[in-house]
Length: 493
Image (tube, rainbow, N blue to C red; front, side, top):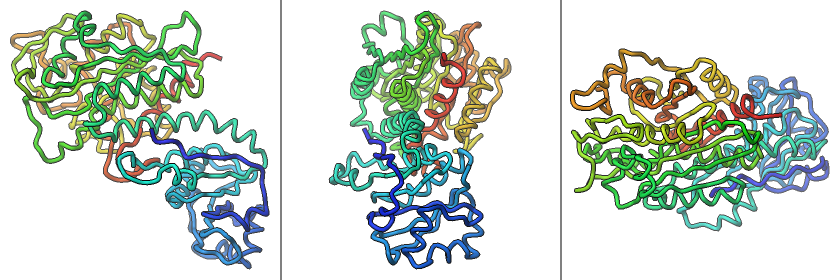
């Protein structure tokens, strides 16, 4: 797994301004005030910092932006990064500064003279989130590069900032896991390999069970199993429990679609772009990353994460359009399109979660529909819910963490589009409102007394350009929002 950039928190050392190698960063407030470290850098560079701060260019900078002086005279560092940041920045401004510094460092050591800067822990989180490269399949001396790319924060109160940053960096590690899983090629991240990686998290204190196909048959998870019929990779369900709350308290359930590769099955996808379907397990990846973050920071909450792991392939054994399959709930589903498979995985997992755990609430995540991308692009995940209070809690958490989310409607008219002539329902409702009818399908498997949120993350799980916290590729979207929601609403004191 990609490791979070090593970050050290040490006392301010003014002599280090002259001697550190790699990149040196100082912080200057928008009004041009220099702290001790900035003044030392200014003296060593014979007034270069003051000239920069007095320039028209610096006056145009927004909080979190950086100007770099390359190969500055008087310093051992190869670059001096001057960060424009108020003494008491917002969380967003501090993270933005960290992200900007991470973009500049590119496998170089970074020495940040933060002093008594406010929100220094959030600044560190910004660095950790953005300093990510998926290079597991590239040949390089990655261990040496990781050592060279370490970050050191020089602080007035390093112990306090480190204590504040530690749970934030645990969240960053969860994000890294989600990105790695989503970026992995399908010949590496098979259903078995995925399950093994999740089982390995038992070392962190999670209780992990892997349910194999014979157990899934026994439970009646026939819709989930139908998706994997065409593959040689066995279908699995992995149950991860974090018991950090009160012993008798019902857990929050996080559920993820884990289609490790999606050809579309017999309803075969076009060849162009099919390579991107390695990310169709993104929902399961977010659940895994969130569970890792909760365990690492010892969250005082009870949370169960359940993922359905399958591969959707065409073969003589594959489910055909027109087949009728009975779900674990007992409802029958007419399979109109085998490329609408994610909902078939999730519906059984949802019913299992409610039957076994009687959760206080249930959130499922899935790269479910291309329709949500048409509606919301790559800026927001689609949010569907049967409970306003539960839903608003998530939306508030997502906004606080800068992860785009937009609530979408549900309604009987959309549900009616799923009517089947020969079964209880069809697995698709046609092209109109495709993301909504997919959500309506899932809603049929939600018990009346269960607060539920469905997150369609097809547009945000993996993208082809940089996002706020990530380089192009897998984003890790959702780990921070779910962690925030759990912290704010489900943790005990």
